[in-house]
Amino acid sequence: MKINNLKIWSITDGSQGMMSQTKGLASEISNDVKEIKTDIIFPWNKLQPGLLPVFKWIFKNNIPSNVPDIVISCGRKSVYLSLYLKKKFSNVINIHIQNPKISSKNFSYIVVPNHDNLKGEKILNSIGALHHFKNKNNQKQYSNQIKNKLVSCIIGGENNHYIFTTKEAKELITKIKELKSKNSNLEFLVITSRRTGFDIKKLLKNELNKITKLWLGEGKNPYEFALYNSSYFIITSDSTSMISEASVSGMPIYVYQLPFKRKSIRFERFHNEFKELNITRDFVTTNKFENWSYDKLNESERIAGIIKERIIEGFNES
Image (cartoon, rainbow, N blue to C red; front, side, top):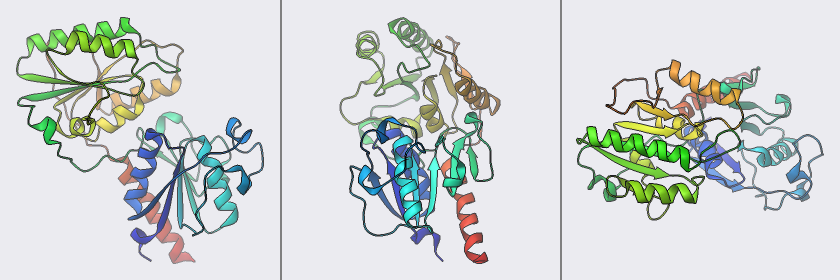
């Protein structure tokens, strides 16, 4: 049996963060990956999986007729299609990324980060979030403009747990300005995300446009270029995904700690783990950057290796 020829369905609701995780894991297992965007009707789309039975007619999307070997899902809505396929085709290996909030007996494997604190026989724990970044990409648009060591500032936005207003943005901008003035040999690239508020983007443009390269959502996103070409990172604390993705670089990551809206043990576990692994440090300095090293993280590759070994073991035993 050739593992890399197995047919995989990568199932999400279409959000980029979830697609990155399923794509990252799927591409490390097989070369035959089909992406499927799923959606479900009311009231299934409002309820946690497991409360109502699953039928084919609850799905708004078309379900391909060919049978996959492996289903990799991520996110609450995708749980339903994974359950349906496992029920219809018992031999399908179904893998869910993130806590599905239902019994693990419904899945072949569940992949969750350590900071979720979920353990079990079928559960595989990752360091941070999975993602698809692994190969260097060459974006001439930016590489021709960057002549010195690059500092990439990756800006998130307010969420259920963190406050991020213009007050926090002004404090961050002040630190960036001070660092820039004291480190003329460094170039700064500021990249916003989908959650970055309009007022914060406007402030970044007004204050940093003349001393940094700015990407505020228009034109080609230099995010992947930044991951592979930065000497240092400054990333806001609201996104475990962006910090996990930057760790593929092996370069120092400074985390700008935003104030909690409400305390999150999950976020605290995540940040403590990455500090203990010497991947991140809090962004408090305004003088100079420190250099430190750590093993580059490629958790998609590591988790995929465990799954492939278990698939082969199961095949040999059958």
